[in-house]
Image (cartoon, rainbow, N blue to C red; front, side, top):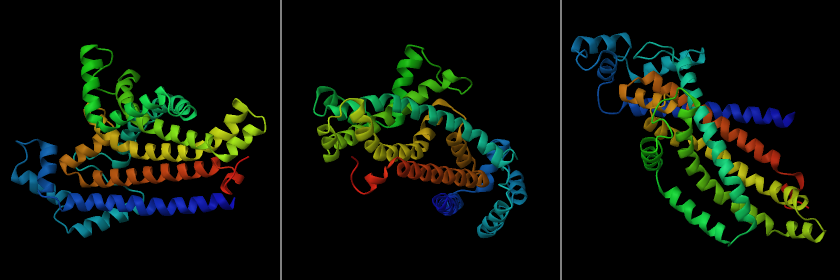
Length: 318
């Protein structure tokens, strides 16, 4: 009970610091970037032809963009404390429900990608860790290095040309069915699996060459009775930590892939808000992203600690 209370206190403190820090940096970056925010909003709201001087001044006055940035940030923070995230300067929609709808699509895409990557990386990484120096281990290491060196948008463009355009196996863009998720999820999963496969192989190799694993062999254990409790359980600690970090960093890759496939997720929403100068939407997206990062990292830390046996924390699992 004490451990749970300590975890909640630490989580809440991290959430407040990181979320507010990210949203503040987003606000400052947009506020002090070149250009006129009122004119950007007017273009997004009325179109280029409709963004006249009077329309721009109307936006500036109605949205309070003529006030000092500190005053506007203070007003936003006060509203946030009362549970109000504000409204979009473009369409007038409430920001929190709009962000949640976008995040649901991003979470689905990211979750499917992470599952695909583990289905690819886990069996291959375990095999390579149990058979280090073999042909499969060397080949997977070379292939992983090649895949990691290619950015997501290059892998995405190549697979779109091959699988969607030439072979017509997948739709090119959209998010209306599960079939639309398959190709962007595969592209993200390939990059994730290339990284996690080597981490899994390294962790399994290190555990299988450890003293406690050899001691368990000398006791007469073999097969799954040896590997599962004395090998895999110990290897799961660094693997869980790394997969958790991948899940948090997955948002960076999702932004690129959502743009490439025209998926209406959180990444696309944030890019649209940046283009249109919708400051409140940018701050809200930054706040939500900060909360996601803290939540995933905190859960990863808790899971890693849960997977660590009591005697492993003392340095040895027999």
